[in-house]
Image 1 (cartoon, rainbow, N blue to C red):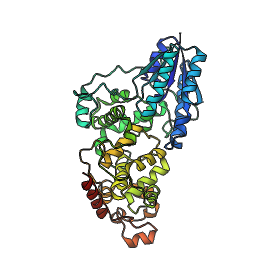
Image 2: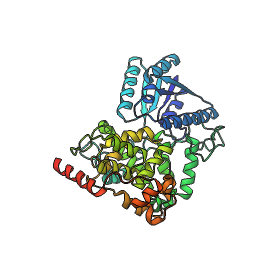
Image 3: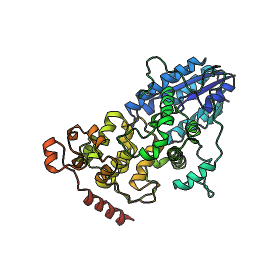
Image 4: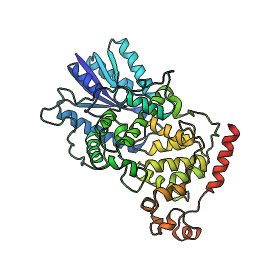
Amino acid sequence: MTSLMLFTRDLRVDDNPALYAAAETGHFHCLFVKDDRVRSSPIASERRNNFLEQCLKDLSHSLTQRGSELEILTGDWLDEVTSRAAELDAQSIHMAKDYSTYAKQRSAKLGAWCKQHDVLFVEHPGLTAVPPGDVAPAGGGEYKVFTPYWRAWLNAPKRQVMIPPPPLADAGVAPSIPTAPEGLEIGSTLGGETHAWDRLHQWLQNGVSRYQEMRDLPAVDGTSLLSPYLHLGCISPLRLVQLSEDLPGAEPFIRQVVWRDFYTQILDRRPDVSRNDYRPRGDLENYDRPLFDAWTSGTTGFPLVDAGMRQLKAEGLMHNRVRMVTASFLVKDLHQHWRLGADYFMTQLIDGDVASNYLNWQWVAGTGTDSNPHRILNPTTQATRFDKDGIYIKRWIPELSSLDTKDITNPSANIRSQVGYPSPIVDHHESVEIFKARRLATA
């Protein structure tokens, strides 16, 4: 019996239920299809594509080490999968269940083809620690507020974490820690399960115990930096929870992993949330090109906002606190629609995830799960509080690098003129009052 193991966003050999199930059937073939539609999407990211290539190289190496191999095809996803399944005379297809609109559409089409051709099609858990639907309120639907979800999640039964299955597991080798292929340096910011494990070990040893204290400080290495690996499934979120849960101070970090599950269960029930307000507030579909361009280029005249946007453009990553500040500024200071900012983030981010990105933007905009729809993050106050010495700002805004601490978060007009840094493009207090008035008028 031949099975087809279809990798999607589960690019790992450790704790991969779909891979385990395919291997149990006997002879199996591993396939990944570079989907033309995903690659040509308006929100596609060159950085994510490059990161994906590194992940696939790493996965291919891991499978080869364990007696299998990965076939990589490019084209129409459904056509490539079904053609290869027919050529292999596959009796079953195994893949991880995904939850975006497009992921569900292509899975449904593949399921219909399998039914027509008498092929067993099985979707497995693995993209979240707890699958959507396993944690649900008594009245049905999805949890709309995080805290009740968190309590229910803690008490929910979890599946068993899996090591790589035979014949992939090699005796005497720690199966959950693949060896890096030649050309991928351990510890560098590169894709793949190998690097996910390397970063995870560093984080568990040196970072998680300080997470609560350091997580809001963009100038320090205070967060896990595992989000790109979680997005493409190079590390299992359940494995991450399992390894973290007994460590001192781990609960605040695990809560962040659970936020990812929380947003995924919303996306599962409301797949339109990447385009539409989860909780409509009557906001206008504003788009002001000069203001938006100043925001994307990091030239708004607000140092913390500009530093974050420049980091995003340079690295494809941004500290989470700064993500909230830059998002709040676009929506509540510049009065642009959250969708514009969320789409722009997706074109830049290595870790651009549909559920987390769009629902975090909605949380900041006040159209999502936040109970305070009028929450405002003052970019100057945030800079003073979380980057008081200006280390992060100086790192990303070289024209401000020579300033004293007292000047860095809000330079005077004279200093701005001297160093060539722009004046603020809006008055923060006036802008937020206009925003609040518009919200109240449509309430």
